[in-house]
Structure formats: structure tokens, C-alpha cells
Image (cartoon, rainbow, N blue to C red; front, side):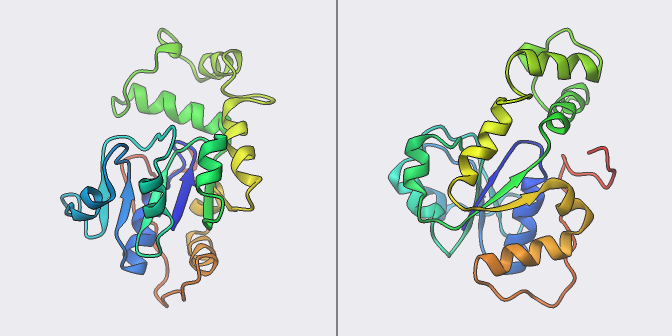
Length: 207
């Protein structure tokens, strides 16, 4: 099963939550690794089902990697752009799209950089306030009408994905996760959903 997400949308928390509930390996990253190599690796330290690798920002998916993403034997998270190639490779795959308001994403990037949990973003060097970051993001076409983050969402929505909003996930994780499980054809466990906490996920509405 495939989870496509915009950055800073609690996608790792959702991946881990779903993998633990369904008892399936959850993969993220692994660009350039073969299917056999990915499946042979052990879970990341401290996790039962989560397998993490460097980078989730796939550009053009290989046929082998796309085949793994379509399997019902695992859950795969990517930030893959909706290029014609990627859309063609994943056309028949039931996809969940986790999306966050673009302005909230830019604000989260700023906080992550200031806290040292994200590498610096060169276009924003020297900027201090959230308003400055938002203005620069609009200036370079990341947010705003027809901005990069909205194009990301629109490109995948054309394929009939299940869209999940970041705020819905935080405000009502139980209903949101059960909706995803049903979409993928799984029967939901009776236990109340508790969203796994990761380094970019906070209880605060200011995540």
C-alpha cells in the first residue's frame, strides 16, 4: 500500500501507526535500492515495523520500486512528485494522499531549521520571522496560487486517491486511520488509535 505525503504532514507518524496496527513492514526512503535489498533489511533501531532509509523524495520511480509500493505485504511512504512517469507507474495503485496547508508546511520548515532538526534551506538563508519565510516561499513559487505544494496535491488527486488532511489526522486520528484501513481493504482493530509520536509530531496545534 502506498502513502504519498507532502513534507511536515506527520507522515512518518501515520506510517508507523498503520504498520503497527496492520502488522506490516513500513518503508520510507530507499531510493536506488533494489527490492530484495529493501526487504532483507531489519527494522530501524527501536522500532518493530518501521524501516527507514535516507531520503523519501523520489524523483522518477523504478519499475522494481513501484512494484514493491503496490504490494499488499507492506506500506510505503514517499514524497514522490506527480510526474507523468510516476503517475503512470502507480496508476492502478490505491493511494492515500496526506496533505497539509502549504503555509503551515513553510512555518514548520522554519521551526525545524531553527531547532536544528532539519538542514538549512538555502532560499531562506538570513530570514528570521515566519512572515519573511512565507513571503519568500510565495516569491519562489512554493506557495500561493499554482504553487509547488498545491501542484503536488492536484497532480495526485487526479488519480482518485484518498485524501487525508493533516488537521483531521491530528484532531481525530481514530476515525482517520480507520478510514485509511477500510480504503485499503483491511478490517480495523478494535483498539482505539493512538497516533505514534515522531520527532516532527507534537500534540500542539502549532506543529
